[in-house]
Image (spheres, rainbow, N blue to C red):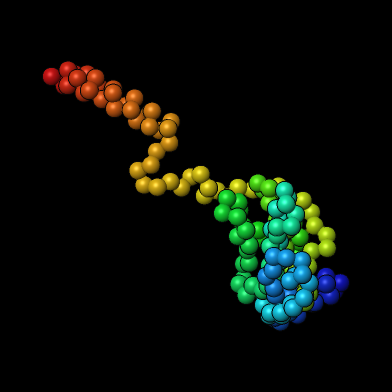
Length: 160
């Protein structure tokens, strides 16, 4: 029975839309005033801040309606998908503060966070334009092309 009592608030929350802060701003004054409200299944927060110039930042807060929310914050890195946790990630002089939550209204505020190492996306570095080869592949192809006439004579000699 105690486990059901713990699940009841979560089951009740799933059916209702959350109220979340909604705002996009890039300076301290604009971020301090004029917050909107949105409704969704999940709330999110994303803050990007340049570590070499702390005055340059972008803050976004809003709602997700999807069943599997994710924040695609950098094309080189895996999307952020952790639920009800705030994480800070440093990548190439940009500090990302990320959070996706569904535990209470207006939960898209990060007062506490844990540090997370950046994880590269599996697609990065693998996708190339058609016909484009790396230098190593070009050297391998050139070496193989040089051997083809010799191999042709070898096999012709064996056939005759």
